[in-house]
Image (cartoon, rainbow, N blue to C red; front, side, top):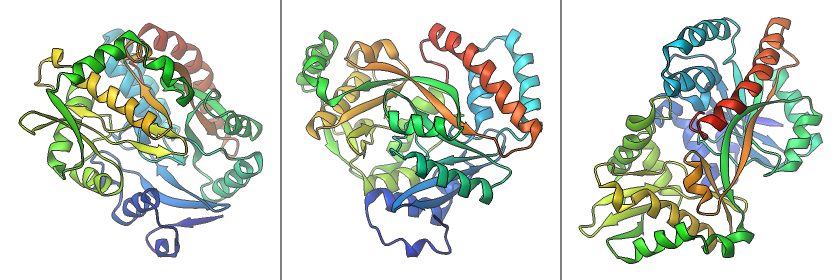
Amino acid sequence: MKLYDKSNISEINICNNKIEYLKNLVNNGLKFYIDNCYAQILIMKCDEIYFPLIICDYAEKQTYLASLISSYIDYPKQMLNNKFFFLGFDILKKILKFGNFDKVVYINHWLISTNIQYSFSDEQIAKITKFLKNKFPNHALSFRNIAQERNEIIFKSLKKNNYKFLINRRSYFIDKNNFDTVYKKSSLKRDMRLYKKGKYKFSYNNKQWEKYTDLYRSLYIEKYTELNPIYNKNFFKLCSSLFDFKNLSDNKNDIVGIYIPIRFGDTIVAPCLGYDRTVAPEEGLYRLLILNVINYAKQHNCSVNLSSGVGDFKQKRGAQPYWEYLAIYYSHLNIFRKLSYFLFIEITNNISFYLLKKFNSKLF
């Protein structure tokens, strides 16, 4: 077991795009790439597996990727926009801040919304947990994006090692063995006919990083919330140098849409999707981007995780829904914080199932 920061990161001899991504984040700091991320990043090694650690504490307006309070208090408060709930949310937020609820180390968290977890064994989870609770005795430990349907090995390993599961969101997944069925879906056929009209075309990165930033922020920040990660041009410049970066352009060669396909094992995720919201909705830019994500996954013989949100849209294109959880370990903390996590998880799991179903995954 070993941790790497700026002082010893040169000791990592492996060279691949994901390691280079992490090295850059460690060397330059997270705020250099994400304007509203005030956490620290380290790289951890366990049995020749390298993965990021995000060390967090409370910070006002912190991105939800690095804050339980932003995820479960500030974000749903904005989405619900109901004065009846505001007082309750504000009181709960004060209690959680007092209890250091955001003092968490996130394990294998790549600072994107959808992390594909390694199949850590019981023994590996036990080693990681023991090492980190000694290194960070005042922090809870957490794995994001845990789903029994997607990775039963790590789910069982975490459960065996006394991690508790906090419901987070409903996500959508297309298995690589189901593409024949997916391409028979009438909605996807309409998307393919739309693309064949030839008004738009896809290409790879052309290094217009400020344009990428504007398209992403127009959708995720301006349309939704500033609690989403505010990726800046440094982030897009880094990602476009390491990963495939897909551009959607119109007949004038103006970029009107983007996404970054990233491969974890045999699964593709597509964070940082964005498009020009001034283009008429009937042009179907989002439809074309999702179609290309699916095509990209099929071409690389991979499954595709389409993340959360717009569930009806994704299910009509063959994606299957599943629940994602945060796995949280807090047994080493003081009695007050243990009780805080226990009660919050129990209450939130019951309330969240109701809210997530009612609002069709628009929360979290």
